[in-house]
Amino acid sequence: GQQWEKLPMSGVTSFGPLPAPLRIITLKGFWRTAVNTSFVERRQLEFCVSCRETYWSVDGSLFIYWCPKESRWRGSRSQDLLKVQQGESVALFGAPRSSDILSLKTGWHELVNKEWVMNNAGVQIEAKSLRKRTVTLVGFSVEEVNGQYCENREKEFMVNNREIYFKPGPTAEEGHFLYWSKVESRWKGTVSSNLPKIQAGKQSAIIGAPQLADLFDPALLRGWHEWTGDDWVYRSSAGVGTMGTMRDDPVTSKTAVKALKVDAKARKRKRDEAPPAPAKKPGTSREQLIKEVFKHFDENGDQKLNAQEMLAFASSVGFDGNAEEWKEEYRLICEGLGRTVEQAIDAQSFLRLVNEDTDDGCYCSDKELAGMLGRSWP
Image 1 (cartoon, rainbow, N blue to C red):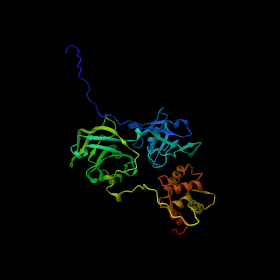
Image 2 (spheres, rainbow, N blue to C red):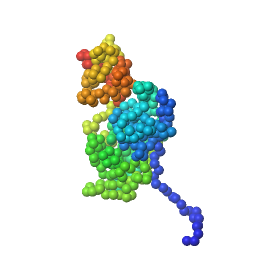
Image 3 (cartoon, rainbow, N blue to C red):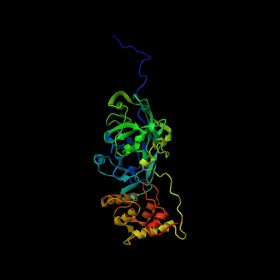
Image 4 (cartoon, helix red, strand yellow):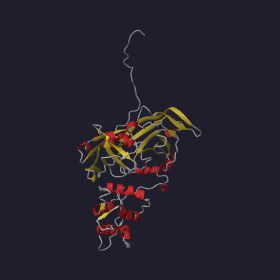
């Protein structure tokens, strides 16, 4: 009580969970030199767009954000952040539609001299930034809820355009997952059999994080709530105990979490195999067939398919939206092909569109193409 004394064995023995390492992506191949740099993940609320993380250039002048309106990652200037957060779609460059920013996909496009140009630009990512993240929950009264949850970013499992975190159970129905609730602005958890229901917009949960808390912010992740069957109970010590990554399990793995596939008929399946090679009609190559289809829909013969002409094609492959919806869809198709609405879709772009079996394309089999011409096909 009168002087300071040094105690050799005293001091800090442990501290709270360390956040998972921030992800870093590197863009290359763009016309703008400033875009060809590294972008660092920011998950803080003030930097989020549409409830998702953003990625910022090292000098802070550019950022990449998820645009739900166009279902793609887009990049813009830092001064545009507020506009983007308010719902405007402002961009200087963008990724292919529906692709994950961690998918290493090329084919990004860039605004050059007021025109969108597609080139071989894309993303390069170090292996450590591709490791799946994990969170371990502790302190809940239902023991099955506690344990390690692993990140899943596959599109068929996403909720509100965000990744989920899955913990398997003895059976598919007994597994649990964490998801971002857009309605409540918080992370919530429920049983895996509720995934289709949650994806359809319904609310269901047995645990919930503090509102506006990021799942990887160690300062905010105790004090979760738990549903007891009658009421929500505050658990001061419940929440995230540890965070980490899966060293040998990249987040871009194509292997789905099979235990989550508990109601196959309730949600759309992702086609993960290319279509079988179509039978060839003697004397007619696939390329020639596509040229004939293009000519068939090119009513004015100007070697381009405008919005009205492409609507006829789109209707033949299942589009049933109204005029306003098609206007926006046509713009996105043109943009994805590196064209503008004024330039319309030329023969080479149409060829690429019907040959590409990805979310960015509109693959048509030879039989489907022949059907558009009123022909049968073996």
